[in-house]
Each structure stands twice: as C-alpha cells, then as structure tokens.
Image (cartoon, rainbow, N blue to C red; front, side, top):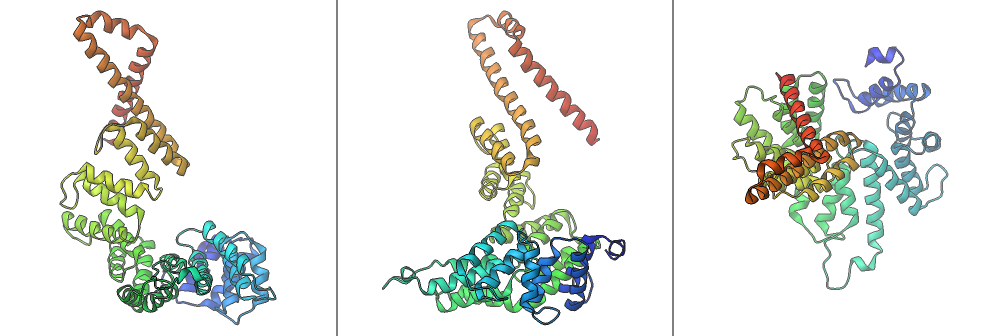
Amino acid sequence: FKTSYHAGNIDAMRILGTFLRYGFRGMDQNPKLAREYFKKAMEAGDDIAPGILGHMHLLGIGGDPDHERSLELFKMFEDKPDSLAGLCHMHLYGLGGLSKNRELAKSLCLKAVDKSSQLDQARSYALRTLGDISAEDDLFDDNLFPLFKKVDKSSALKYYLKASTSGMLGDMEALYKAGMMYKYGEGIVRDCISAVSAFSTVASQGVSADNIKQAQDFYFKREYNKAAQYYALAAESGSELSQSNAAHLLDKGYCNGLPKIDCEERALHYFRRASKQDNGYSFIKIGDAHYYGKAGLEKDPNTAMSYYMLAGDRNLPQALFNVGWMYAAGVGAKVDFTLAKRYYQQAAEINSEAKIPVKLAEIDMYRRIYLQRLVSYVGSLKEDGHVYRSVIECFKSWGSRLIVSLIFAICIHKMLKRSLRR
C-alpha cells in the first residue's frame, strides 16, 4: 500500500489513513497522521475520504473538533454513507450552525444505512444514532407504556443491536446502551440475562478487538492458519464476524494441523454459533455439512434443504439457487418444477451474476421435464403394443429432435467438464 501510495494511488491513500486511524495491519494507531492521509486522498479526488475526514473533525478525532469544517466536508459528497451519517448527527443536535431537525436527521441516517455495506463504519454510526432518536421518541410514546401491560418491543433496541454487529469491529457503545435498556426495562421487558450478556461482550471487547486486529493482519499477510487461530479466540467473546470468519477459514482447511474430521467439526461449531446471530452464509454452510455428510454427520438432504431455505429467507442467491435445484432434481423434497423455477428466478433477480448459472439450471430442468414426459409417453405406448413404430414417429417430429439435441448437448457439456477437471 505504501508503494501504491507513493505512486499516487488514491485508494492506497485512504486505506493507509484507515489503518492509521484504527491501528490495523501492524501500524500503530495515529489518528492525527490518519487525517493527513485522508486529506491527501481527498485532494487527489477521492469521494469517500471527505466523509471520513468530516467525522474526524466532527468528533475531534486526531485534532480539535471543528463543526463548520465538518459541514463543508460532508456537503462535498452528500450522497455517500459517511456524509449522510455525519449530516444526520449534525441536524439531530443542531451543530455547525444548522437548526435542529429530528425528522430530517432520521431520514438521513436511514439513507446512510441503505447505502452502506455491513462492514462500513458509517453504518454502525447511523444505526446507533437512529437508536438514540428512537429511544427519545419512545419516552414520549404513550402507546409504548399502556397501564398494567408489559411491553417487550423497542425500535431503539433493534437499532442498537444492529449497530453492535455492524462496522469492522461492531459498535460497543450501542451494545452498552442495549444492555442498559435490558437492565432497566426501558421500553421492553426487563431482562437481566440479556443485560449481563451485553455488558460481558462490551467488557471483553478490548481483548476481542486486539484478536480481530491480529487476525486481519495475518489474513492480509496470507498466513491463514494464524488468522484462523486469532479469529477463533475473538469468536469466544461472541463476535459474529469472528465466528463466521473462523468457521470459513477452518472450512477451507486452515486447521493448524488438526485432523480433517476435527477441523470440520470445529468449523461447523462456529457456523452454528454465527447462525444464531442471523449470519445467513452460515445457514448455507450448515446445510452443506448435512448434504455432503461432513463433520461426522450423516448425509441428510432433507435437513440440508431446511437450512438452505433459512438462508433463502435472507435473500442469499446461492441458497435460493440450491433450493431451486433440489426441487428440480427431487433431492430433499418432492419434484416441483414450478417452485424450482420460482427460486431460480429469485436468485437471478437478487444477483445479476447468477443469471447465467440460472439459465443453465433452467435448461437442465426443462430437460428433466421433457425426459419425464417422454418416458411417460413411451410407457403408455408399451401398453398398446406399438412401441417401436410410435417411438420412431415421435422422434421424427421437430419437437423430439430438439429434445434429443438438448440431451446430447448436455452430455457433451458434462464430458468436457469432467475432462477439464482431470
């Protein structure tokens, strides 16, 4: 990255600034120097750096707070997640000469969430701010505290919990606020067990953050065995990101010398833990373990199907494709070509890159349909005793020629695929 930086690479400037801000990749944390890298990236034309730099000026990270400068930086690229989250904060508290406007602040934070990815720090910050807005709204909502009736729902809690699992390291301040809501029953039923769980995670996050940082450093150095080891250590603190990353590396075979079956069992263990925190990819991998009989499990397509459907409910195209194929092939479920086509189309709609695999799968599905009809037709002819003559007439038709050509093409494709694997 330093070589790319000196060559004028804009992305490298911003990435080095991020490493310095958080202390990643073996670099000492230095927010003041990070500001300089973000500034150089901005001056070189980067459209993300102004929003990050605006947050640092807003919160006084790496220097004194400067709300007017923050506002200038956020307005340079107002449609970026960092800028939207920053403007949300400023409108909520009336900073930088802006008037307080809670509704506008809320809409800006919602836009920041929509435009950001799960690992964007702007996402966790926007979600926490939405939690703050909702917590204050709940205090004045009479419907939330009806007389003699306990309430166990809170939009504030929902936002805080989402914020705690967003960003590169999660938002521990948001999780602490969620713990306080559980502790005092603010807007929800009092839940001491959940409160203790939240506070324990916050208390252990100092160690967890160090382990995640170490794991990321080893991963980028391609020392995957060590990365798996540190992700596994961080996973014990309850970090869903660490659980899924540890499971993924173990599943790839980076097991530090463990026997294969032990490695598979440990990977499945972390996939199960991550799935309990709604990690969709983990549902797919648990389904794979049941389908292929990994980690000492018996092959069980029916159970695999149930996990693929759970992942499909979270709009993961790979899972939707798997469910479609199982319906088409009659594996783990009764053959249902209508449902198969529906799941295939959902996968293609969610991810454009799935369109070609879906088209090929649909061709295979139509092959199954026509072959099924052909077998049924020939079977009915046997009963009439005119098998040979009728079949010859059938194959003379253009429709049957098309079926035969399609079957032939698929056979050739499979033969070529096998030869390429060899």
